[in-house]
Length: 402
Image 1 (cartoon, rainbow, N blue to C red):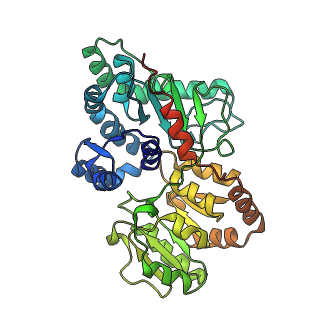
Image 2: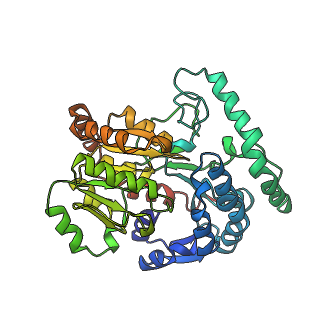
Image 3: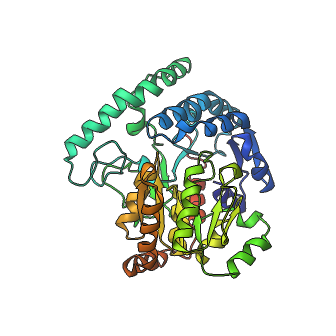
């Protein structure tokens, strides 16, 4: 979103971020206005809860924190900021307050999807365990599963409080919020290319795909000479990270160290939380708080990660194999797509053990079909910027007030 904002700023627009204060320093460093949503302590409390990475409990936690807790504040911010004919809003599907503001106030809205897992389809369906949505599953059974997921899970979590808020705005109640209503009827933007997730006949008609944005903090981070010295000091390393928000990765990094030692390969461990790193690291294994992926992945042997869409895209761009430890949310779907593209492999969290990880990495790194698949994908990345295309689609909404 920061990368898109930069493009909008270049087009002459004022950009205002409404998000958690944890990100305020970076937002302001890049020259954008900021409005707080919740507190940094809330963000830290949620990510400190190990249940956040559970396939079911994690969805419940983030539903209450990222959707219901922010619903009214987002609406109030937009109500205050909205200038008819001059304002457009870009927001993720979790920002229910933005969707209600579009409905009540008439402001233009683009729903931004970072990953295809949130776009339902009974044709080529996303991988959403424990749902059965594979290619051999009948369409009627997929529709039934989506209906039951809404009626027995999503609506029970979200519809009550959402409709209570809507009633105060004299809006009618809605049900099956995540079936159709959650997407803006004006514009839906997918930040991924069609070769990663081909558009489906039952996606919202307003959907436009712009490609992977590939923005990281390289533009605002000073180069670390220690990183460069390590990269030049030997063979391409393995890169291990369970995600920037993961605070429960002790087992992940223990396996990372053991697998690297077993394979006799150098490795870089990445996390904001150093207490997860083993106290004694063997020679050739180092730890850093953060490194922009665009700086290191083109010089790495493989990326081993959690399956976040940003990490997945950066590995594609670098043309290296990836091993994904999928836990929750969109991660299983990203792992499945990586496998179908012959660019890597996926494991569930309970399968992430040293013998299996070491064996899979050896196969991925030495496999010519995997190398060919990675090269082919790297060649698909266009020279034009997905960020610029996305900014243009958002800009086009200015003046499209209802």
